[in-house]
Amino acid sequence: MQKNNNDIYSNELRVLYKLYKSQLPNSIILTGQDVDIITNIANNFASLVISKKLIQDYNEFKESIYNSHYQETQFLLKIEPIFLEDKQRFKKNIYREDIKHINHFFSTKDEVSQKRICIINLIDDFSLDAANSILKIIEEPNKNNHFIIVNHNKTRCLKTIVSRSHRIFFGKLSYDDYINFYKDSENEEYLNYLYKITNGSSFLTKKFIEFNFYEINDHFKALLNNQNKIKSNTASHYIDYLQKFKNIEQVIPVFLNYLQLLISNEVKTLCYSNENKLVIRLLNVYTIIESFNKNNMNLNLDFENIVISLFHKLKYE
Image 1 (cartoon, helix red, strand yellow):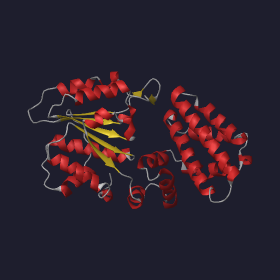
Image 2: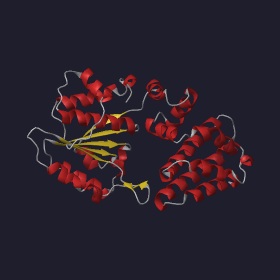
Image 3: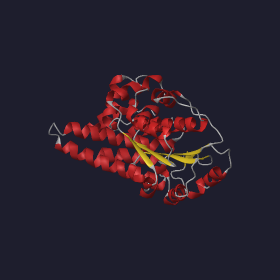
Image 4: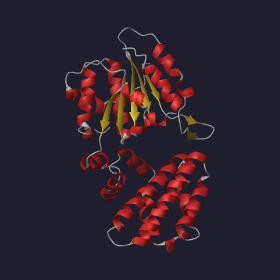
């Protein structure tokens, strides 16, 4: 994290500081939409706890959380999406078989006061059997074994896990914090637009900037407002654009999500201009994209066919 972001989530950090200074719960859930920032906080907090460093006050704690750098250690285990080398993509879900090593990690004997921490990033990706396995470990607590669970959608975490954990909600970034966090990433006008369509989500913004969707923004909006601009080779241009990225299976759902947010923003604007027919068409397009995204996740559809079908729908819907 950047040093000029030391005031982001200060209220939430104060809660975390109180937990740090008291008896640390066996399970802490950090819930919020900005999972990249929250994950950094989780990593650095875990590193601090494991290091046994003596923190004198909140400001020193905050400095450590924001400006330290996570380091691998035998006392820290991270559970994250698994990359499938043969398919060159990440698994969509984490199953019980993928996390069976957690029991071994926590059963390892250390010196009496040494803490072990397992960071789960994200619990949203866990299958029900995997989540229940985590629950079983939490239900049999050891004072030196702890979970720090990162959670994006609060409804995607088992209520039984929540009831046995201390949960901290991380709210939406303020506009000033959001702009400050990304001020070196993109031009301010586009950041303003991203803040608007993502509702200030740092997680989505990072993805949209990473995949350089700024390049297609104005062009796609023009296509939405005028079907005649969709030519026979339009889909091919977008396919070529997307093929530039190494992990295409990760890009497609983010791409479709971006188009949905872009459409949603256009609809909000048009609602004040009596463009009823266009609003209805855009809402239909939004539903079509949602269907493509859902089917892509469930069926692993070929991305070229998704893009070709999408622009065919856009042209003739």
